[in-house]
Length: 383
Image 1 (cartoon, rainbow, N blue to C red):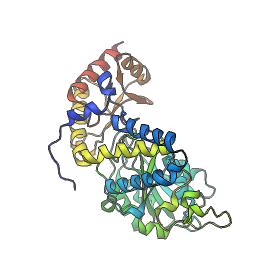
Image 2: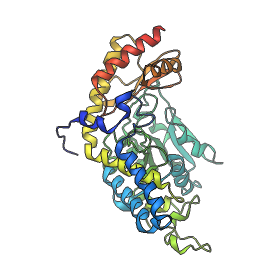
Image 3: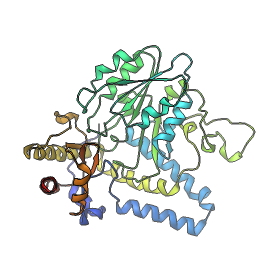
Image 4: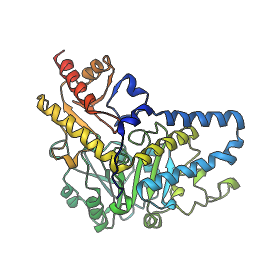
């Protein structure tokens, strides 16, 4: 576990120019843009202009590898267990294509997962998708998976944090349930990694997928994945692939395909190098602040926001126990889209999902902003 150290979170606000103009509580949709991330993209553009295609061999391939290494450090993985992709759907499609469904034709997820997860298997003929059910629209009991998992289960694929409530699942326990039946554990950590400390060896999962869009502050077009060494041996060669997965990609051999011998065999085609530079600069910030410090600060902000909204009389669809809350607070209301629009007119940026207003403070936010947002929500609802 990282050591908690005194952290001047206020000092980091200057790195996010948006915060000087707007009250931004929407990191769970898109992380705020940092000056470092903008500088990273500008560096890419300068190299493109100055070097053209030669930047590939001299610099850009090295930047891709450096990004993989930063992600491995963040989640406690070995360098041969990580790769990059454009988004979660691409990774899931590649992993799904490497699974054998002849004896195990069932995948278990739940009804609060982001739809990308079940979609991968709902479209596959002969594969059955089972859903663990939520009793309250906030969480899914860990025990709800056990009756569904059997020797016919190929994988339990689910979220670390629910995008609809901010509930943190016990993915370690879910992984144990999957492994007890000989199934894979596939974790979508897009709403978790960065704000919730993530150690893949402690979790024990086979696959973990996340990305830069939200809590890792890197914007669009970059996703990161982990495939354990053991899972690499269990999975077959993916039938969804690309030239970056070839063991000797620069031989340009179009007669035979021989995949890389590590997690990079689940990569696809040429990545967006602008996204690589953006993601890399953003990971520097997350690693610098530290996941434990981020978790401590985000918990403080979420608990304060939760209590203010509760005291104001709003109905919350967020876990009651503080330790189960990630950086998302959901408020039930009949017209959340209208409230989002009214808040935007006051330079307050939040988001909504059906029937719920979604607020997501991060380490660069403040208690004062929480108070401002709650007062604005009260005005907007009355309006």
